[in-house]
Length: 265
Image 1 (cartoon, rainbow, N blue to C red):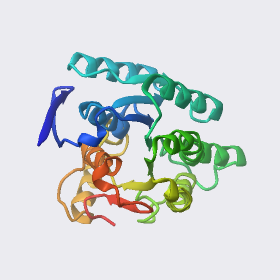
Image 2 (image 1 turned 90 degrees about the vertical axis):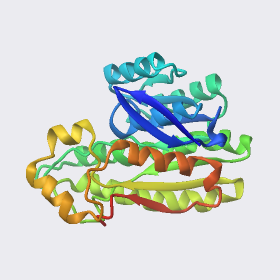
Image 3 (image 1 turned 60 degrees about the horizontal axis):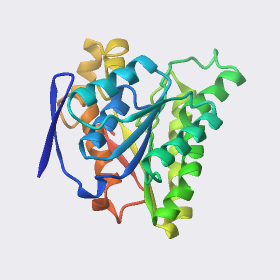
Image 4 (image 1 turned 90 degrees about the horizontal axis):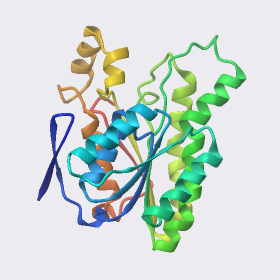
């Protein structure tokens, strides 16, 4: 079976996961890019979706687009993820309005380029706060809800950037490599409570930001050279994998990192 919906004039077809219908899902960085696609795909499954983002205009536009398409609008909660108290409050509000969170998608990140020489201790700490720290504290906040519910799925987002030895952003690649260790540690500790923890490492996904800032003719040539699949990867490619790892269809899968990069790594 499949479900079809439209967002910004583009159709998307996905498998239906009955276990996701009515499930309380919390997504970080859900207002644009991969996060917006994840929010849209969970909404189409009939999940109760809440998301946080610092980009208010993009987030409110997403909520309106989904509501106009006839779906139950997701709950948008503005939040700067460097503020852990605000993140905890957003998760608590989600649990109050949608029921205990049983799916956590730790998607938010920012791949700002920077040179080795320009990095200060404060900037380094900010890179960790934006790309790594909030993932642990979001997981910490949802664990009691998942235990109460008999289990859950936590999906952390890493990156293939460190796997391929990409330069030009050492703070980002350091944080993203740490997510694999975080995932494996949490999976071991939370497995007895039927809480699964996996991570997804996307490759070069053609979000609007990536296309605007980084995609060049030379970059397109590199994609076709490096990837086994000779096509551009879209946010929906990652969202579909996320749905599967959140659903009961993947109930035996934990403690793993799944690479979604068209075969680059």
